[in-house]
Length: 199
Image (cartoon, rainbow, N blue to C red; front, side, top):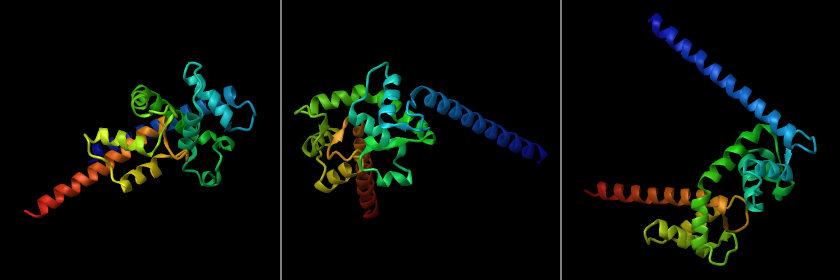
């Protein structure tokens, strides 16, 4: 019994040390980011400062406006004051959300070549966004020819268009696809339940 208690205490101690180390890493990152990119010296990153930081993470290639707005939205979307921000170019990222901004950007960068391939095929007017009919084509292709209903398409558009542009931009595509797969999984689960329940 005593061994189990000691083991549990050691595990708690290790978790606390790990959390403390993460906090210190985050504090160092915040300090580095502010020192390098907070040109206005406000203790936050403005839209333009965020764009400069993202450019540095991408070997000098600047993000598009929609990419920068998406990172801004992903970084601060859960904050109470985000409800009032209609123009993301006027928003700012506080140090608390630097990690979330970096994670969103890096995760997007990992899938960018696949996203570009989808846009090359389906963004037939080269607008940089997938309109309703183009998104329907993408989702249909992912579903082996099964087209989404109008309600499903509306749901995906409403939830994935976090920038609010009315179409699906490159950084929003992963969320749109994820939402579509979630809907399809729900439909498949309902079909299995119905078939299983009727037997």
